[in-house]
Image 1 (cartoon, rainbow, N blue to C red):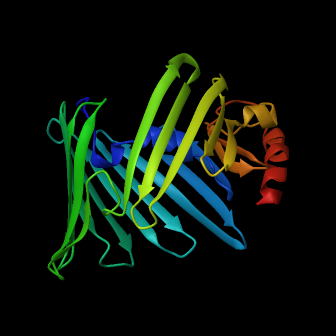
Image 2 (image 1 turned 135 degrees about the vertical axis):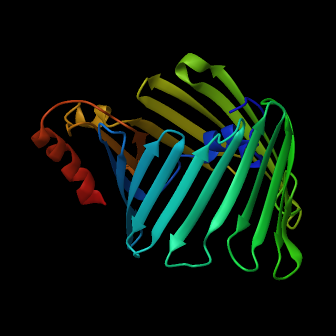
Amino acid sequence: MAKGPGLYTDIGKKARDLLYKDYQSDHKFTITTYSPTGVAITSSAVKKGDLFLADVNTQLKNKNITTDIKVDTSSNLFTTITVDEPCPGLKTILSFKVPDQRSGKLELQYFHDYAGVSSSVGLTANPIVNFSGVVGTNVVALGTDVSFDTKEGNFTKCNAGNDKGETLNASYYHSVRPLTSTAVGGEISHSFSTNENTITAGTQHSLDPFTTVKARVNNFGKSDWSGVGNLLAICSGLLAVSPSLSVQVVEFDGWSVIRSFQGTGTADGAVSCLAPMLAHL
């Protein structure tokens, strides 16, 4: 794909990830295994209060076609088929959910050095049509995002760097030292309905290739921190599943562990390491 401004959803994404990603209070456990043929199977479990959710996702790749199939505890089947660059700069995405017959959607994305366009349409008799466009570079970009309901005959969404005209957001991201992923960022949000401003600032730093710490604070005095690391730091490398194992835990005992670990060891070591985590879920 061309290097450019990306899509509308990419505007401010680095700052949002720095300030909001990995700050979670839910308990999450994820295991991903890879086959020699490139098939990836991911099993995830999340505990939100007294609610327990789980799903299994399978990803298959064949040349430029990627198929993702996910089944959750509610017996829903989610399927996404992505065709990468059927022609230069273009990406095609087909998604649907079973048994929801109105969930089908076809999306086309086009990437250019100075523009990014995305258009999607629901595969129903009276679909919702969405269009977003961005012009600029990977440093500065302007864009808009609109949705039109063909059944109601009106626009259901019209954004231009703000949230339906209700809020105005501006963000900043600066990479201080790429080798250690050290970065700082900030966001200013103004709510027109409450006439209130929210200022959030944050930073991150990698202690080693597997461990990253993050912190943020806002003008209301609320502060948070997050430790993002590899299970190597917790399990001392006692994980072993052939051909490979990737483990993901979010907000386990105050630490957000979201990086994958692939290594060798003993199966008993893996079980002894994972057992206390599963007991907390």
